[in-house]
Amino acid sequence: MPMSVTFIPEEDRLDLSFDGNLDLTVSEGLCGLSSNIPANLRTCVLDLTRVDRVFDSGLALLQLLCTGLRRVGATLVVLGDHPEIARCISRVVGNVLYVSPLDREVRPHLRPI
Image (cartoon, helix red, strand yellow):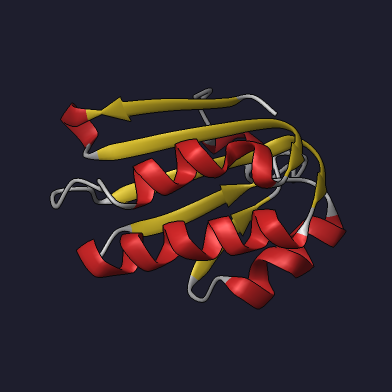
């Protein structure tokens, strides 16, 4: 499963985008990222709009990432439009802002990542 990583230093923001299944195929990238989160990071945006299915291993990897984000005090924003994924994420990740790009009130405020 491809994972795209973009760091925007001007905004102290990290953007992660996933395609396909969220599972062990991204473990190397997420583990490396989780251990090297910049101390000045303020926001992490997870784009899960192109994720088909989240496996337990993917949830564990997200939990590892969220532990690192909490350590530096970064806010996590999850973009997604699958109710099943929203339930899974909310069980594992505390204090998450889950935004559906299909929400007509929210869509005008989102910009592409």
